[in-house]
Length: 126
Picture 1 (cartoon, rainbow, N blue to C red):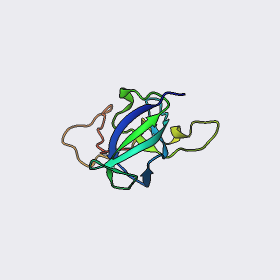
Picture 2 (picture 1 turned 180 degrees about the vertical axis):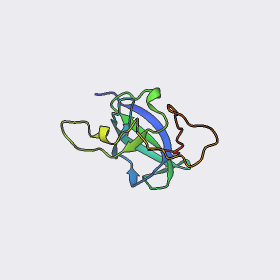
Picture 3 (picture 1 turned 120 degrees about the horizontal axis):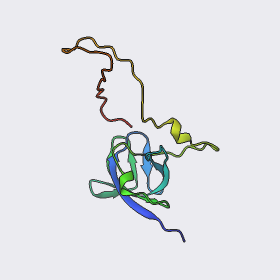
Picture 4 (picture 1 turned 180 degrees about the horizontal axis):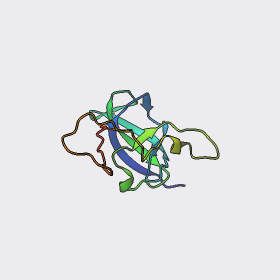
């Protein structure tokens, strides 16, 4: 018998539906990898439900065969549907840590010189 690890997470269902006993992937970790988990329970406003749809704010009880450490749970982690591609890690194509941007400054009250680093406020990213 393998040991299962449980965890309670809260958040908003952004797209699709989440059902009890559904298999999902939890991540990304610092390497862009996801771990398989199973939804064991869903609560909305402290009431147990069997299914949650988009825009619902819920808490889910997940079980994992692999240990999920406290530092793996952080802003930006998601539960997504499994991708079935053999040979490569398909999740690396959907995870982005860095990006390049072309910045066009229309007006700025200080002098911008070579080596200037812009700050981009983009809100919540998934």
